[in-house]
Image (cartoon, rainbow, N blue to C red; front, side, top):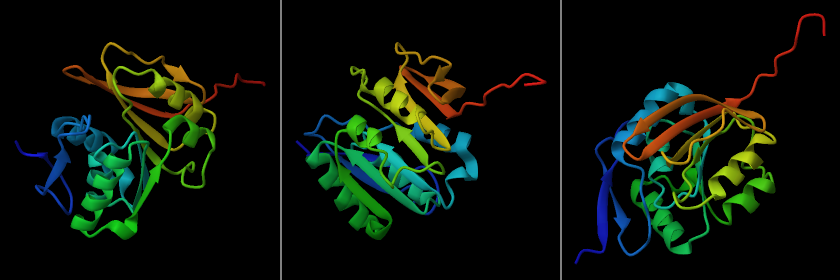
Length: 193
């Protein structure tokens, strides 16, 4: 039985390039159709940006962003086996110098507000579908929001319109996967205030 599955980069410099995904790990790489939707929504917003792939797993979204012109990618996951795979993929693609791989609990890492997480960043969040950690991470991100957060989640777990300083500005459904795009919420101020 093969030890890897295949997924492919859908656009940019490495378009069509196949990436292996370890089968022995419990990884759920973002499907190609959903990744295409993410980058169609973001357009050129990733060009030159630092992207942060939280719950990175195999890192397919971060590598897709690099392929489409992101300056660098930060991959955060607590599973060392997944991160070893991310490092190997970065070497194979020749982009290791543009990648930072961090082993950490996602919520603890976001709460620490590291230098890698700035207001100009594009953040991808794909928490395990059976886990409530994603909402807690969104709450923490909402305390000092990045430029944009793209959250992949199970359709049964809808997000509120506002989470701290973040507001859902777009929502799409792809089978059992929902994709929510959040941006810093604009506070409405009444005339004369």
